[in-house]
Length: 231
Image (cartoon, rainbow, N blue to C red; front, side):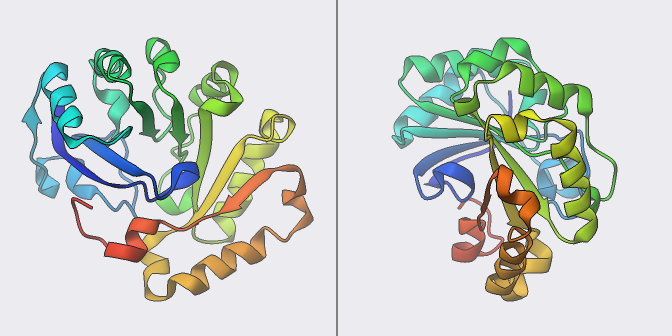
């Protein structure tokens, strides 16, 4: 498996925000989002370097770091063909597993091994039309409600309108009260993060959001450490 970094920090996003967590960042991504905060994970051209490690070696490093929660991220972790093998080992060690994915790749064999799928389809501010509806539908049809959170980066009205269309297309978001997390786009938010959160908070005052389990949350690690790596 192509591993860029393994380190312990706290989870900065989503339902488990603040939990001590070991992160495994895999190399390579199939998208090129304009506001990506880990462009170094895309390719060698962006400064990416990695080490090829067997799942056993990764599991051992995670064990040494000691955190109960483990996040498999990237890049795009679903590109790693041995992801299920690693997940089996980590579950045997008693870890709680989160996969952070851009929701463009679906691997059925991995689904039951992961405690929390953090699904982050990309909206127009990412720069391309990256929404993969067949894959989104597969995740919605397969995951238990308690096994998923849907994280959306919002920068402007175009992002919110595309998100509303997405939610209306799949009634399960409202029917099952699936967790929907809105967070401000980092580059635009960093100069005044409280103001960026306030703008999102104003958006969810609209009655449209009353039928959804929506939360406005920051990126905690950005507030604490900025754009530094290994945190």
